[in-house]
Length: 268
Ligand SMILES: NC(=O)c1ccc[n+]([C@@H]2O[C@H](COP(=O)([O-])OP(=O)(O)OC[C@H]3O[C@@H](n4cnc5c(N)ncnc54)[C@H](OP(=O)(O)O)[C@@H]3O)[C@@H](O)[C@H]2O)c1
Image 1 (cartoon, rainbow, N blue to C red):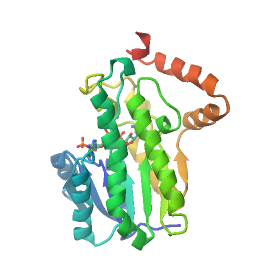
Image 2: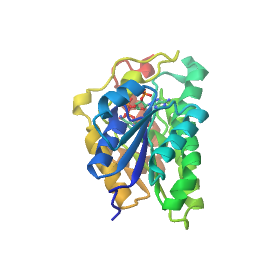
Image 3: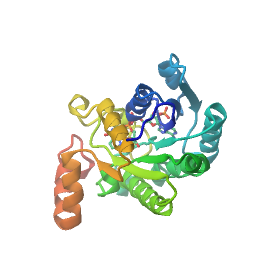
């Protein structure tokens, strides 16, 4: 099993939720950790005490910020062993009402952010025979209503990761993606509405969801075993299998599930 002691682990979007928990888990395992987010103050407020953490302000929706993040990390630690493309935003709005810029923003952050960080980190990861991870979603296996942009970005990320994994099959580099189920975090508060503004409140009871810490532990265990992919919850596994075997039935069940959400846009 892979040990992360003294490895250099990069995590995008670590000022909150799963990314923050991933950074803490990496530290627990003895890694040197580089983190980025747009809100540097929030990152620094949390990680200031850790001598093994390097914080960088970066908007992964911008190619130059991704380049800067990776170059700054290489300057600081000299190598990259693990890159976790975690930064992401969600949405909740019907496509018929959606400003197209919302869809573009989600593609820029969730898909292009992962592509650009991977591109700039790859030479060092190749040298280290390291690991590239994409934090995806069930929405990357099964399109979800009122989440067209989110689903598109996660499908695109998984396609990119699968193609890259095959390219790198004999290079010693491992590429994997992970699909958390509903996990307590800020993602539903910042989810974009039709006009791009933050939804501000979550339609779910966050206390009843998987914790970000549990999610981070599962991701590190999978990385240690160099698993291909991880679909974390039973609900997620059933959705993926059902969608493959009975896609028409999956359409109906998924519609029904999201219709039940408080203030579901599907009710209109
Ligand atoms: N929570 C769930 O139920 C769930 C389920 C499946 C998949 N996921 C995936 O898990 C990942 C983490 O989400 P989370 O649930 O932990 O959400 P979260 O609590 O909202 O955290 C998102 C993180 O991404 C950062 N971020 C957002 N846009 C960014 C940008 N343009 N550049 C750099 N950083 C950016 C945020 O920091 P700043 O705002 O400071 O930039 C924050 O640190 C996402 O990819 C999400 O799609 C989450």
